[in-house]
Amino acid sequence: MDILISLAEFYVKSGLFDEAENLLQTAIQQNENVVEPYCCLGRIYLDGGMEDKAVEILKKAEKIDPENKVVRELLESIGYTEKEETLIKDSLDEVLNKLLEIKGIVGVILVDEVGALISAQIGLPLGGETTGAIISSLFNKIDRTAKELMIGNLNRLFFELPGGNISVFGTQTLRLIVLSRGDLFISKVENSIEEAFKRSLEILGVD
Amino acid sequence: MKKIMKELISSEGVIYCLVVDREGEIIDFLGKEEIDKTLVSALVAEVVSEIKKQINISEDFSITAMGEKGIIFFTARKDFILALLAGQEVDTGEIRLKLQQGARLISEML
Image (cartoon, rainbow over all chains, first blue to last red; front, side, top):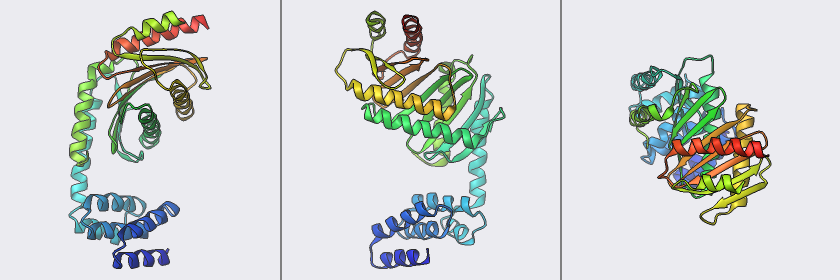
């Protein structure tokens, strides 16, 4: 790993940013739980003025090792503090809780494009992380199908299942999953879900 | 079966109706426009199989997938999948209802 990072740093010094990025992305794919390539890539993004990409990769590193000082320092260097994170989390919880107050809605989960949990409010004995990952994976699969069928990017998905319904509002970066009882007509609460989804996008600052 | 399908695509905005078996083989189809039905049937069967695997569901279920340029409706029954392709400007509630009715009639027929 040290050799890979040294090589990536050499690439950066030589102005070969794409090569460095590719090398580090490959290193991450091969060693998902090793923090160093994430940090190195985060630093490259920061130096290149790509703060959004830096935050994204450093947040992944933080999930692997929450106590890592380098990760924390890099995040703080761009003003991403625990306080800000708490504020974001509280705002999202507020939005999701409001949806959960609607009679018939039993769970609300917010995940990113790879199914990683951002926030969940579930009134059932279900794992938000697992449910979110499964539904997001299905969303991705159907999104690919939609593209092949020339109907463009998928933005809404409704599952009518024997035990209840699942509604997903999504973009390429974020998915809001709403679990509801079968007797709730989603069309009646669609606007509230859409509003919550838009608000979540705003809070997270993503498109 | 054509009569049932004709009724399904009579709704404004619906452009194609397809009945496939769980392996993706086409049982019957009817459309207002020409599409690659082999691709649609294979993709629909693949998605249904994936949902069954991931959610571990054995009973009937329905999906509405809304894209930027159109909507796919499909309902999976024990022996077949009924799929509809439509433009964006459709009454999704009406189509979902007609899809269930159509699937029930096809079930009886098969």
